[in-house]
Length: 110
Length: 115
Image 1 (tube, rainbow over the protein chains, first blue to last red):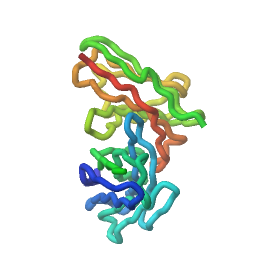
Image 2 (tube, chains in turn orange, green):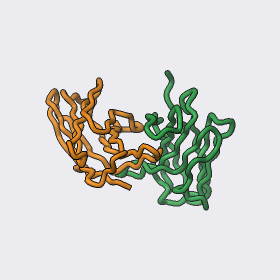
Image 3 (cartoon, rainbow over the protein chains, first blue to last red):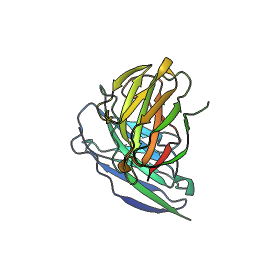
Image 4 (cartoon, rainbow over the protein chains, first blue to last red):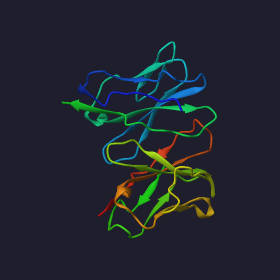
């Protein structure tokens, strides 16, 4: 299975943009890049996903490198409620498996 | 829209005892998942149902764990007997269909402590 590598932790100031990196150098051509996040004492929740092009939704933006070996989740203005563990996950188009790594713990400082 | 419901939220038992967790998925979701999340790690898939049939249970420790989804709606996950290393949060998730890119919706989890 293709694996992802994320920093263990990151810090951000409130109302500033946050860029959460993910490396996936062994990604295959049909793997989608998904991001989920897990708020304290809650189950994970979907954030965004993409294949090749950059994606935007109401929660975040996803920037995917041209060679697809890395991606960055962008929170445009971090709030205290964005403090969570963020997981970058590769999902094959023909496999429903979703394998979580340890993720990046984001701390947002007021 | 109501989310995925799980109960109990917390459970403390002694090793070698039995325990059961319950999950009610989002209405209309055909696919149901049970995950185990050990402290400091990401969730690990234990078992996956499509309606009331098992799709993948390759990571379920079948000597002590069992799960069922009668009538293709609610599901229970049982551990018998429990070991210390079973202390974890057990998460239930559901998705509308069994397609690879379908969003999974997670419940709040049940935190199990085995003493």
